[in-house]
Length: 127
Image (tube, rainbow, N blue to C red; front, side, top):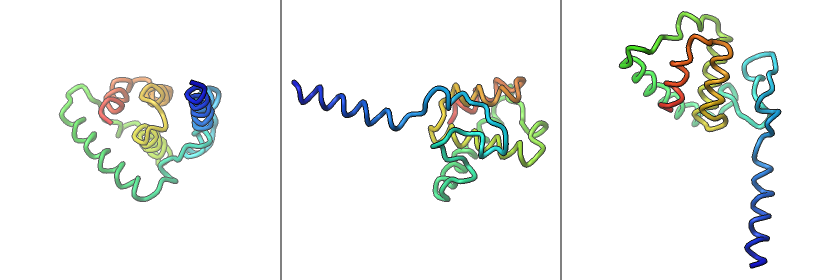
């Protein structure tokens, strides 16, 4: 019995080293898109090539799904600068790579583009 309890305690301590604190998840730093994420995350700009390729494949699949949805509005009119496109791709990558949750993704997106709540939810639900 003691070994099960000891094992559970060791596992709990191991998992605490793998999680972010709530403060780091909700911080709102300024700067370039790749610097806006909590320490320990790997944004799109710094991701390994094999992961970027897998991400792009999934991104294309979700993109094709958006064309079939009459309620989905394109982000093209609002993502006009390289910085805004980088911000968008980084958020999508973090969602795809499970570095942020669906709720965090939608919150990040709607904090900058509140009129696109449906679209952020659509993407989050289809990744």
